[in-house]
Length: 232
Image (tube, rainbow, N blue to C red; front, side, top):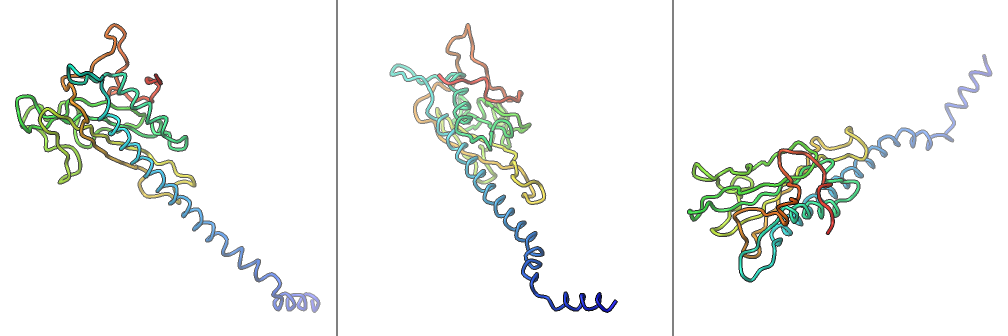
């Protein structure tokens, strides 16, 4: 009994394990802070990447069309498919934009016979996420006085007569590195971008290069990846 008390007394006075004990107590907190910092940095990078993809798609969509000196540029379904495929190539493996997100490309135009009535002439989509446009669907504004434009309230973009605006929306479900306990409250990452068409364009329709063998149409009522597009 005396020996036991003596051992307890020696342990009480010992300071050899203080540093290790303090480290053991502090380590979970340090680990949590480190992982939270990692998750925050990754979320920021993903948001930047999604924004860059939206800008890239809108910019490229404003440039497509068959060059012609005799008539306005025609655009083709295959070119739109290539736009989506290009975004797939630019998307990193960790983001995988079409497995976890949705890209919506809209053509905002002015109704024929009017000078400013805005409507969505056509819309094409790609991605597995069940998301729809926040600013309207194909045909909106064609009747009933038109729509204000596309974009957040008070910041809408508009098209001018005989012109078009390529408006891109991306909705993406963020994939956390660590998991939900250390991730943000909302997993959805969104981005929008718009560019005015760069050259005179045939705004009447989207054409097929070979009507007898039409290219797939990236319809907004289907949910798929960019497998319908292939490099030239």
